[in-house]
Image (cartoon, rainbow, N blue to C red; front, top):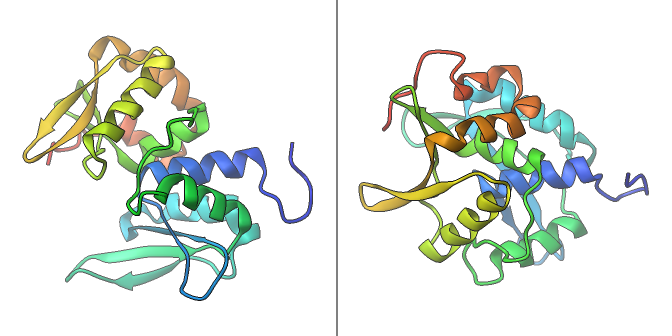
Length: 200
């Protein structure tokens, strides 16, 4: 494990990478050298944000705070400190100016679990999606190939104007087998342990 002062552990790297695949946002503040990570969810996901903060607290200045945004929506968010390893990830994911998928990225179970907690959804009791509409189709195909390497068969599903990844029913047990050990209690509803989500 990585225990040198100032470095990230492999667990932290995986959580951060899964977050970038999902709702996380890396940026470099004007005039600064290194990137920081912004984590921003609805206040209804408070326990999930608190878990991420606990995992990344060593590179944060202060804890999550609730903040009103977009009309009635209340966000719950925090940012990390600037960090050289985040800068490497920034150049890997934002080298083209917009978030894209590095072709050499290898998904591990924790990355996949965090990505699923960020962007996974379950509809109509048996349909499972990763909401990848933010990515260009070429990046979605890279993500599809990464999932296929984990023996998770998938396809692109049209969601209104954009596409998202649909996990084939035959591969849902495999997906759950990989990620279940890392899904925190407040997010187990995404595995179908609570009422089914709507498909919107």
